Image (cartoon, rainbow, N blue to C red):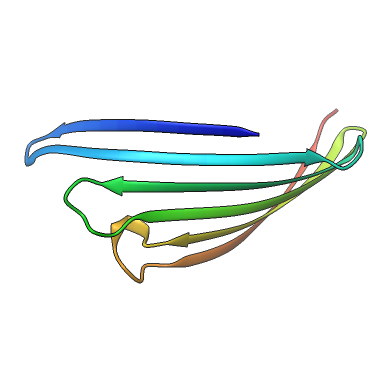
Length: 97
């Protein structure tokens, strides 16, 4: 289980931009080979009414030097724009020799 809070201020030619981010996640090892996890993050941009959010559900299976990982990712209000929502499925295979 983890929690993270950050605040970022960027000085740009058009003025300062400030972001406040909150995120948390939990991962559970079902056994030595299988784990599942869930993460959630919210980001507020100063002066913007829309909060960007992302959720991710992950599943990983490892056997020896091989692992397969699947993540289902959902974002809402991407780029701090209402209605800019995206979904993605990420699949990866790792091999160690």
